Amino acid sequence: MFSHKLLSLLRTFSKYDLNRFRKFLLSPYFNDLEDVVRLFELINDALRQGDAEIEALDKPAVWNALYAGRRFDDAHLRRLASDLIRLAQRFLVEELRQEDTLRESLDLQKALENHDLEKHLASAERQLDKYLNQSEGKSTDYYYYRFRQHWNIFNRASKMVATAGYTEKLVDADYYLECFYLAQKLKLYIAWLLYRGFRVTEREVPVVPGFWEYLQDERFDTVPLIRIYRRVIQSFTESDNETHFDDLLDDLDQSTGELTRADLRECFYMAQNYCALKINQGKTDYYYRYFGIIKKMVDLKLLIEDGQLPEAVFKNFITVSLGAGEYAWTETFIQTYADYLPARIRENARMFNLAYVYFYREDYEKVIEYLRDVEYSDVVYALGAKSILLRTYYELGEYLALESLMDSFRIFLRRNKVISKNLKREYKNFLILVKKLTTISPSDKKAIADLRQRISETSYSMPKNWLLKKIAEIERAER
Image 1 (cartoon, rainbow, N blue to C red):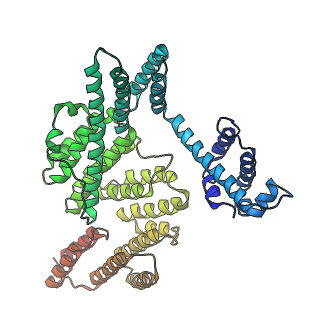
Image 2 (tube, helix red, strand yellow):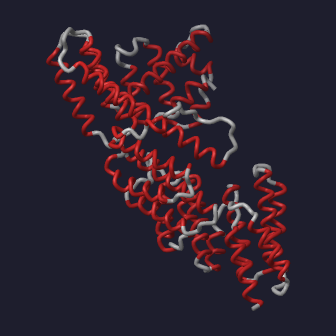
Image 3 (cartoon, rainbow, N blue to C red):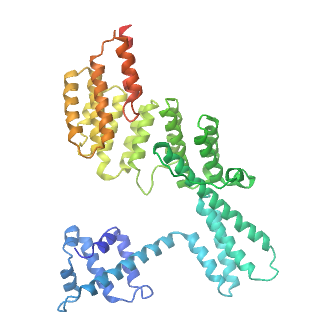
């Protein structure tokens, strides 16, 4: 294939992007190399015809199309591809700049300072201020842009003698820089805290002595991100004091209109992590608090990013809402939001999760019906479907089918090379526990106590609550 690096880049362009890139290449300001345009036209035609045409673009074919009758020159062709890559990357930067009106306005402010154009500059700064005042929420970018705005003004003032308000301009620049730095620092610290919660790490995000005390300065109480990030850190570092989490949720409610959608979404995810921590500690009432956060995110339309819903978010929301007993809501959620999942897993996710809802509703015949439509080629859904089907057979008392499934499950785990050793060990342990459920005598108190202890030590990645519920049912049967 001709220049994999070039073709892989241009393959990411939509038809709209390709049309705009063509206009970009035809502009003498950006490009004056006619052969680069001809190379692009050749690749553009192939891209629109499909993969077969792209695969046919080898070096000799490209050379003959561009320079029929001339002796092949590999170095020249590589330079041409390199020029087109450079221009495509420049195009991406220009497109990004045009989407960011604030950055462009700041660049204009700086550019006009270099010329004696006071009226133009005054107009540009009014427009910049308007953009900043109308910006969606106060993100870290907002404070960085405010810093740049005031730094530009201060820098200009510092070159003039006896400028009025010189100190105020300096102080404003300093304040916005601090807001940007502190909010960004806290965000990184929270990322480390969350990582530390499920991974062992010897490294940490350091803070200078007096940092936490300095954050209490009342100047930062009006900065929503700093205020909320402080609440998040308190919730995790003093997790036993649950009033911090109550304060965090209250602050999030009050700050909804002050944050960008991206920041608000991220802050809600942080709150969900705290709920997950509590659930893993056995505090099942946090399923309901977690569900409250999920419902709020749905009501605020925060889930969809760039037209898609991440699969992990979809699965997590379903697990939590089922744990909270919200079966009807969960079914509606699946039917509504499965369409926003990546196309390759969309139907698998829909069928599997609907089966999961019906398992919670104890409609086991429908569980089996929906699981028939799950493709087992995806190992994640294969494991999940086998786990649900295994529990369904147990609930129905179909012990022959259960035994057969357990045997095939063991073979699947042994032969599969994708599943990690730790996960294989957990599923094998789950199969052993289910087998014990089918053979244990309700009158054998010691065996039941031993089994409960063993279940209690299992990971929450397995259906731990279901196993404990089945033990309780066996005990009740004896009474």
